[in-house]
Image 1 (cartoon, one colour):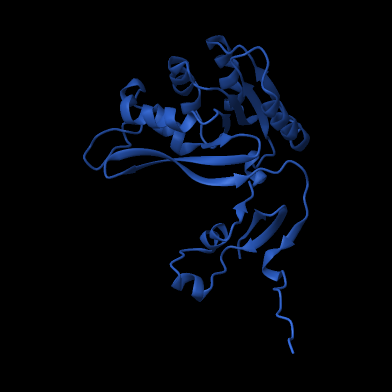
Image 2 (image 1 turned 90 degrees about the horizontal axis):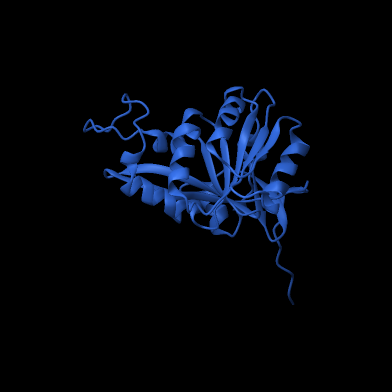
Length: 244
């Protein structure tokens, strides 16, 4: 049994996603999550992933402007309510901040990084990945890029991979070419989401037919408040009425 929450029409349901029906397989579905999504359900973001097993679930906001946007402040406030740990804001972001940011990550007091950016400054984008993000694993990045993030990442992996140093030459393609550099390490070893305050779209990196691809790997409903959950496997089906 593996219980997951799904949202539909203003209500959250939990389903055993290990449960599968013969008729669904006959229709070509591979798992129950596919069945539920096809039926209009959206997975609910599992906030248990937002803290370490030690309970440390701190956050930092990285912002180029003098003040962070409201939706990022709201997200950080949610984290403050859930995890009374280290929460900081780095505004007017510059290289001098990264010594402190790296130390917070090394000490494992920060799990969640919140960014609002159109990524117009590509050099700064690369600097942040190379000098900071590529050194850590299992960090959550919630990025409100207004739709720019996935295009920027795809352009980088297609055209600018040589701008990122090779992280570890041990990781190679079967043909011997190194591809596991600072950018790919960051994408593979961390959890990166396009976040708009209502949904969180997980971003996935993969190599297929020697082509590097960045794509969305699922969209999750973001719910701020506590909410009632109905057992979706026990919701009574509507029964037909007797007719004369």
